[in-house]
Length: 68
Image 1 (cartoon, one colour):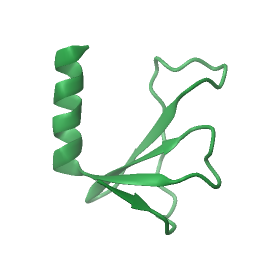
Image 2 (tube, rainbow, N blue to C red):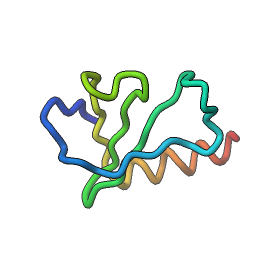
Image 3 (cartoon, one colour):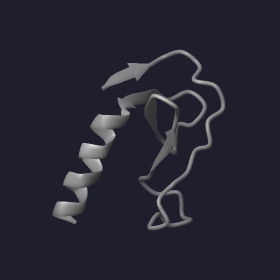
Image 4 (cartoon, rainbow, N blue to C red):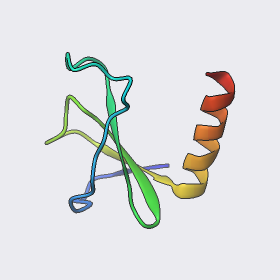
């Protein structure tokens, strides 16, 4: 995983359907051709964006599902 400081274009960002509309603690995720990007929904304009390889993201989702 690496923190991206450059503009990653305009990917399609989305939040989990479990996130409320009250603007709480949420992250947004966008899938790119070679990576998945994650950002804090409260700091969209100036916050950091994390770049995670697609394979690593798949492992993360698998582990999260096991523990969920």
